[in-house]
Length: 403
Image 1 (cartoon, rainbow, N blue to C red):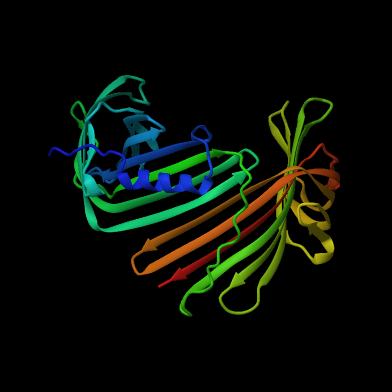
Image 2: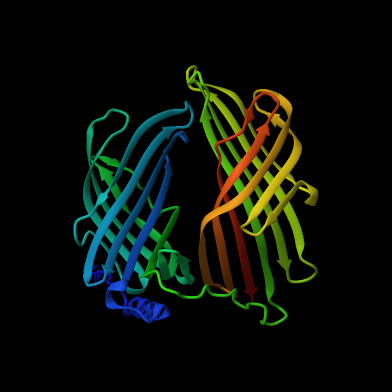
């Protein structure tokens, strides 16, 4: 079968051009447009021998990519292959091989609309059990089903460096795949693949140098019919991270603390507020290669135990019970103060998706900045007073699902 190789569709080029209009007025040198199309085919084969013990699994992923940045265009194809053979009765790994690398031109072809695909290639690999060289022959074909699952998103991301306007979309079909993967007299596929897909991923973006452009407001998504399900949340976050090594040079201590204050929006009823404290506290002895302590705790917080004032200040003062994996039950005390500092980073994104019988749309925005953090965290056996890397953030997300 002779299939023409995929090129970048004019639709993506048009979308990229339309995104550029978001940044006007611009000089020609202040924006850079990029468009990429990937055609992919994947197949997973599983077979068991007559004894019922020896299991062979083969995974093939082939990708054909065409990209354009400004006036420059390029294209390439590559292959990922993994083969494993196991004796499940005795728990022994019998054979293994893997390959990841470029394919010759024309070895992988996908038809327009991702209806069919073909892969014909000869590759060299190394057998993992014996370390001997291995030559593999791949001759595979895919036939896609009628149902196409699509997803689409677009949006703008802003920072002090400028704006990145992007659009992306993908479409995938469940497929029937069959063919052979052989190494000498050994066959690693039999019959049809247990799972297979054909798809295409298209992306376009325009990066624009910093301009005085307003940050887009939250999209209005609540005006659809009564049958629409609406959900979303507003969230404020403060967090701190610390990693230190003691004076002996042996005990490495890692600490992460985060507070999430989230207000949920639902279709019916009042917004629901939930505040959560998450702490990860680990000490590891580098000299003996052994853990000293390790705990993770995630608990609700009351309004008296924390406060967040936008991106300006925040605090958390909480005493919570915890169980360390090595030390057992203990009491964790967190007393930290946050002060926002430095520039503010902003991003915004919108997207839509369609599946059979359902339409979804979403809009999200986020803003954040670094923070100076002072205070103390202790589990009764060790205390951390910094230095801390701190952050403060605010996120808003709204989504709808419409039958």
